[in-house]
Image (cartoon, rainbow, N blue to C red; front, side, top):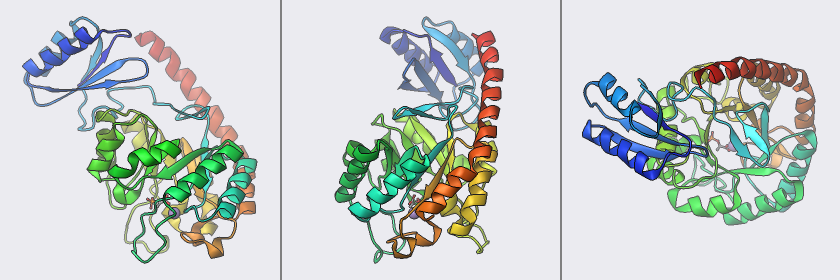
Length: 354
Ligand code: PEP
Ligand code: MN
């Protein structure tokens, strides 16, 4: 169950709830959100209804909700309002569709600055680019590491774009967090539990990519690791999963968006670049990403994809990205109208609940 404490609830009240839960046979996990404290109670204590009633009556408690899913904090059952993650003046999960664009890998100053300036001019909100690269082969380019992070910082200074970049290991979290606005967990690391727990100890936003062969439940349990370790600023990225199909690099599970919208309050971003592996497919699937109601889109862009150190075949050229941004406009207008209608329908319901 999820216990939301009242605004301004004191430490004594929080401790009291935790003690009561322990007495009833539950383990309490306390999360300090921006506004209020939320306590997740996990376990198989008896007489759930009775326990809920008793906790509800404790001082400082606002509400108690039973959550049937194993992922408690990220579940929609525990929190109806969508999470909105603030980055550099934008809100991921809010009323703005967020576009992440940039190269697969940071390769050089010239490559990154050219790309950053072009994607900024075309209207992207966040610059992506890997400095630590998880490569299938140990003989492939492994990334510029800290040198790449410095170039990302330089690109941010030049364009004002926030930076999203991958962190591959728990020991590198502090270093990457020094430079990044958003730390990306790659598909191959979705179940690197030590990394997830370590990311729970920072407050910067984390973009968790779905594992190559992961179910939605496993995906949400990985997000739960980060949140229950203390960092509620998590959003998800669907980037295609392994199936028997070979026409595309992966199979784009676009149904993940409405499925996740039912199950979780975390924002969801789509990545058609890694899902398809093929430049020609990106425009159609980007439009589909907006139409399906995702919160954002991540696209790989490179000034000269033929010479890219990684993922050239799926990277858009700079003018192709600019054209995509123009072609997305009517879809984005519909998206905005639908989002506004949905939030005005939710607002009175929440007001009634309060
Ligand atoms: C990437 O974003 O460049 C990347 C390596 O993605 P994924 O982890 O989804 O393969
Ligand atoms: Mn890539």
